[in-house]
Length: 56
Image 1 (cartoon, rainbow, N blue to C red):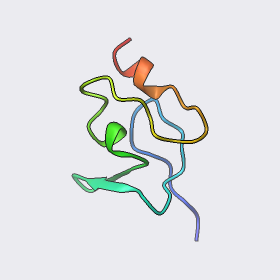
Image 2: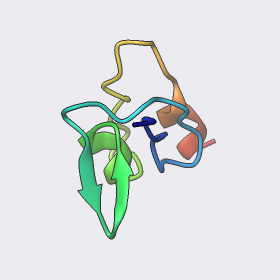
Image 3: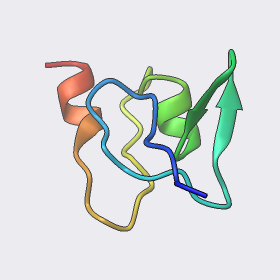
């Protein structure tokens, strides 16, 4: 089974066991699921900086 990528526009993290489902899409963390509405960082251990791009 192939893992899917987070649906956050600037995120390339893989969905893991703690994936968040919202509106039929999968996100790697709650921050991504809310499109970093309050500047929450991506919770990925890979150091993804998609939150910075969300408000860029």
